Structures are given as C-alpha cells and as structure tokens.
Length: 111
Image 1 (cartoon, helix red, strand yellow):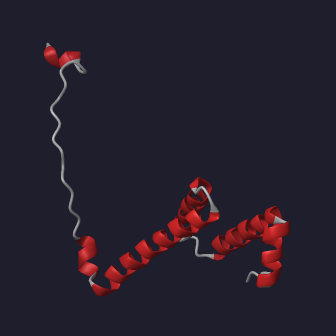
Image 2 (cartoon, one colour):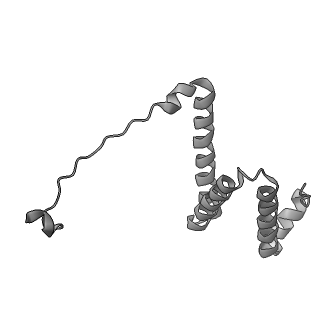
Image 3 (tube, one colour):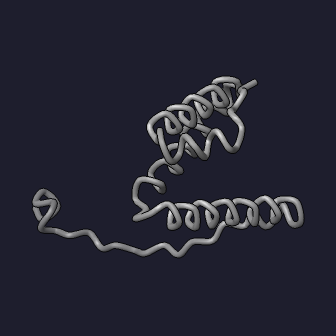
C-alpha cells in the first residue's frame, strides 16, 4: 500500500516543490498499476496515458480538472448502463459508407 503525505504537506509541495509532487504522483500511479492484476494492467496503463495526455493538452489546471471530471462522468454513465440495462451495451449500431473502386488507383483493373 502506498503511504501519501498529509494534504497540507502535498499543498506545500504543490507550491514549493511541484517536481517532487509530480514524482510522488507518478510513483503512486506506477505502484498502483504494478499491484493490479496482470490482466488489468494494459487497460490501466492506457487509461493513465489518456489522463496524462488530457493534463498535458489542457491550458491550465482548472481545464484539466474539468476534462478529467467529464471523462469520469462518461465512464460512470457507461457503468450505470451496464448495471441498469446490460443488453444495451451489446446493441452496436453503425452506418457503413459504401465506396466505389477508383480505377485510377488500380491500373491493372482497367485491362
């Protein structure tokens, strides 16, 4: 289990030692993923990558918090659907666009 500093200590780190706080965050995430079942680790790493990209692309911490909160709410809504109406998750719908072959791309088809 990971032992984190107190909230006040992490607030101090955020103000005075942001690199140390980021290292603590990264280490805690890596330990958590490493302690998960091996079957779950690839999905957890993919999720963490998506979180990291969202944080990096945000123009400020508030924007990243809002985007991550929206991501969490989307996943919770999907989980709620899985509990309330599991059959709905199996109902895939897609519109398929038909493409005509382009004879200029395949000259052998013209002969």
